[in-house]
Amino acid sequence: MDYRLGEHLTLQRVRLESDQVAPGGSLTVVPIWTSDGGVDRSYKVYCHVLSHEGELVAQPDGLPLNGLRPTPTWRAGELIEDSYEIFVGPEVPVGEYELSIGMYDPETMTRLPVYDANGYRVSQDRIVVGDLWIGSPGGGHD
Image 1: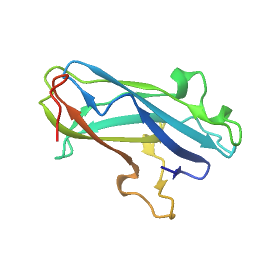
Image 2: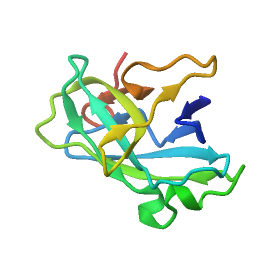
Image 3: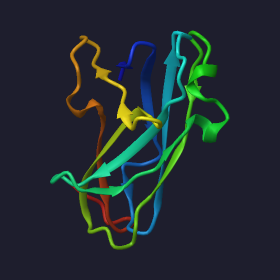
């Protein structure tokens, strides 16, 4: 992936256990981060599941590694394997959704600016991980 967040953080890649989850189920998302060691603020991570109309249907937010490794403790070059469980409510309609991720300052609620590998700022300062199908297990999708 290789997205830079702010001046000091990079999202290297994201692992998903699956690109499909049933309504009422959950999915684990594992972002893998690095830092140059120069982070002086503690940032929160968000994972958003959005409809194609932009409606937020599921969202875990949290400090990295459940608060055990705030961003100022990350050493230069260290790989941080973070983990978030996304719970999808049973009322969420079956269909295709978008999974995105990013970081923000919990004091100001301001997202860290996100830049792609070419240095261009990403729209809404959120990294689109990909599509996610919400539907019955084994139901499949095209």
